[in-house]
Length: 154
Image (cartoon, rainbow, N blue to C red; front, side):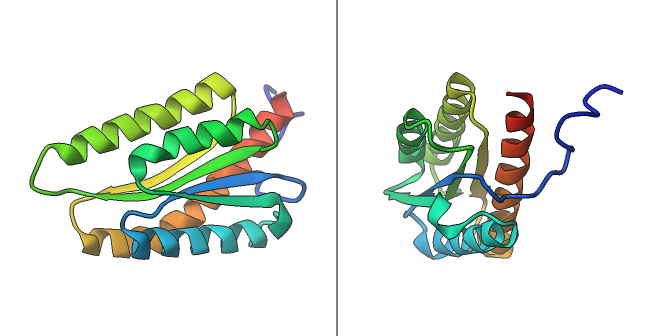
């Protein structure tokens, strides 16, 4: 069977992995809660605290460059992007969300490193608050699963 000898599709064993987190400070109440949930889940999955690097950047548009800086180190099995973009009254929401997502994908593909993109793009603060903890945990799970998948095929 194809892939039977390689990592399982849901390998959530984080022991031995190095994970980098880039968190935007804009909407910091939400992004800090997400980062806390993410780190707690990484620890629960077996990632050692000393193997988690956490950087903060001003906003969502700065996330890709920080991810690139971490990717350039060639020390991480996966990276995580955490942020929150809340729709306002102008087109700025779409510009920030689209450019940030495109930048994250470029970093992932050009560096062949999994990046869990958990930057919330929501209509209002209530939507963000309702998602912050679950999405923080999801980010950790995606990063660990994808790191194990990519490492199994490297």
